[in-house]
Length: 247
Ligand SMILES: C[S@@+](CC[C@H](N)C(=O)[O-])C[C@H]1O[C@@H](n2cnc3c(N)ncnc32)[C@H](O)[C@@H]1O
Image (cartoon, protein in one colour):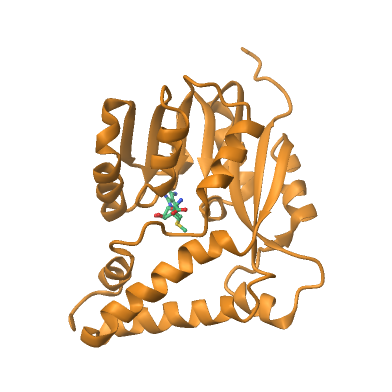
């Protein structure tokens, strides 16, 4: 495993992990209910990774038509494999989530909207929403009076803000908040504990780029363990303020 590229090393680490970011199935149920997503909804899992939430969406809404999109072919292939039992009502595409077409009753986006920016992404998705549609997304969030350890965890995301700042970014896109809750603890354990096991499994054979990728992931887990009650995603369910002119 010595001659892997940096990207291949990253994908090797993520192979066989259930998800690529923090999240919990129960939070999806909450978001679907806050968004009042109908049973036969058209749903998009934007930035689906290997499809953990796509599977949960398909189970929670057994009559829904679900598209899932990710830009990384490796994750798209994994998500296609995982969702194959649901048949044609779940489709996974290698696409840029900035260019969603819809129409969707719900766009679900776990730990990926920050790649576009909250205001920028919501603005782009406005025309991909069906009348009455909503977006549910999770976004890094600073809690009040963050410790040095919490700030250190988010050092590589200088755009991070608190929940009031996220609400302001939502409002700047012409959306209102239907519901919000914090993801702290469980959702992060669901991501980092399997990752720590994967690192331990790969470590004995790892050299070169893979060894560096494992070191980097270990440092991230250590930074989370230094302040687990302070590291949060805000899970936001939002909807446009106004209908589009033709709606
Ligand atoms: C942190 S992972 C989260 C994956 C998944 N939602 C989960 O919670 O397990 C972020 C994902 O967003 C994808 N992504 C980032 N920017 C994207 C874009 N412009 N279009 C499609 N996918 C994108 C990445 O490839 C990655 O799989």
